[in-house]
Image (cartoon, rainbow, N blue to C red; front, top):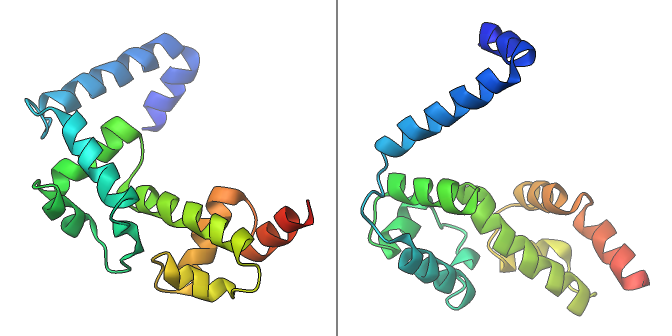
Length: 148
């Protein structure tokens, strides 16, 4: 790895070619080969936006994949290749987006209650995810946005 890194610094084109070849090799083993992913993506988004599946604190890659009639490895590849994200970030984006709305619409609602409402099952994971997506804590987000 160190050798490849050093060669990549000296010969950037070599590193690009190597990355392209690795990607080609990865797609040869694609678990989604021959499947039209557009309807699956549409169904997954519908499950999240219409059925609010992300609010289920027990939601896992396996349970979402079962809703989509695919195996967890296929779903993981679908998220990685088509949405450039992983399962955790995909679900947390929906949860955080809803939490942002509730924080502003219901300023008297406790932050922890909002965390549970949107599908988080503990304070730490909510605060970590919220801070990662927004760069500030939920309390600070609410305070700054309501001041405007």
